[in-house]
Image 1 (tube, rainbow, N blue to C red):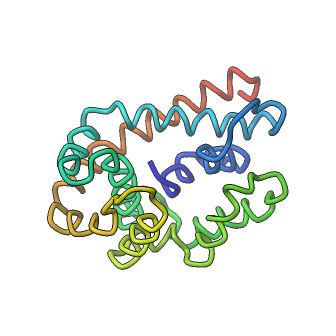
Image 2: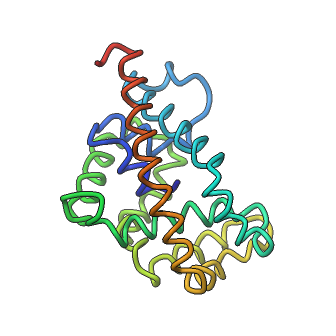
Amino acid sequence: MNFLAHAYLSFDKPKVLLGNFIGDFVRGNLEEQFDKQIIIGILLHREIDRFTDRHPLVKEAQGILRPIFYKYSAVITDMFFDYFLSKNWEDYDHRSIEDFTAQVYDIIDTHKAILPHKFLHPYKFMKKENWLVSYGTMEGIQRAFTGISYRTTFDSKLEKAPVYLKKYHETFENYFKQFFPELVSFSRNKLDELLNKNGYL
């Protein structure tokens, strides 16, 4: 999953959110770098990615894209799912997405001093362009894919991904709506397990 889903799946626990958000940007001995609840968020991030990558519905969705985008099909489905989460936000949370994302940015801004520099560079643009909200518009998702395509080593064709989002919009939305409740349930149970294991429950 992508940034918005990882934020949502932190279930309003600020330090878990920090870890969940930076999960792709950290390496090495976590205990030497972060406190326990941030580590729990990082571990949760990895569990979410593992569950997502192995899920049959996600693999089916990726199968539509793989003949065109090859290894990048996983990146694309992650971003498509953030698009549908943002677009259908009111189905999943009582707050407006604007209020939710403002809280996310506030939490990150408060803890910038302890976050990886590799994360803070893209975060600057994330906040400025409000990626978490703009993911839910076709213009925003196009801008995101175009930006990533500039940074890939090979010809990823990622800037063309929104063409397939439009073409198979209903199909991908159905995949998301079937998969996401399962992911929420898995993530909530996994977070409780990690919190309990570390003495927080």
